[in-house]
Length: 251
Image (cartoon, rainbow, N blue to C red; front, side):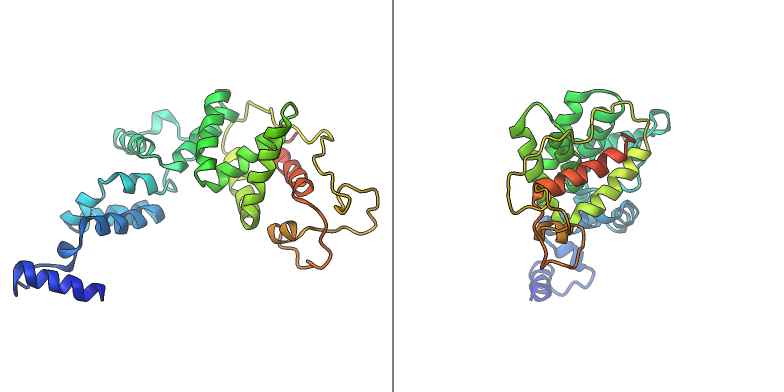
């Protein structure tokens, strides 16, 4: 149906002029969505699309495209002296348009490397609350390790629970990031026995540990098949994950 509408628009605007392409007949918002999807997957493909025609070139300058642009072609921790002017301009525009990957990467470097803790935490928080999975993973770990504020810790566990099936992949990508930079801030420390679990049915909270059990959430997150024997809550699962996160920093 969409193709028929485009053809009708071509005929209406240009009669039988065969030189009019389908791309020229597409509305601008649709062109922007197409280019935005390309940008989110591959910068190389975005470059090719921009060269293909002026319609796609114009659409590529829309803020939506910069917001969704993939950062895979850029170093996780770029060295300032290796940045080219065009690259700096592109990344700046991505940040101005709210590209979450930019906020996540800046937050990681600021919090763990350059010791700009408040700014780094704010950038991680922004990316996390707007849906960036790796940022949500790191931000939840920082909150869960907070010994001073129980409400903050609970928020951390809630954010961590939202990740569910993406926990393992988030941990893998975050670990690669941590290994790519010189970590100077080791504020993340292992759980010091501050247990938020008060459930009598949770295996992680009780003294009887003859058989390891998992919650339905935990079984899904860690791809455990035996869901008939599930009694470990999100707090205990979060404490376990916090330990894995701390291992990235050799704490």
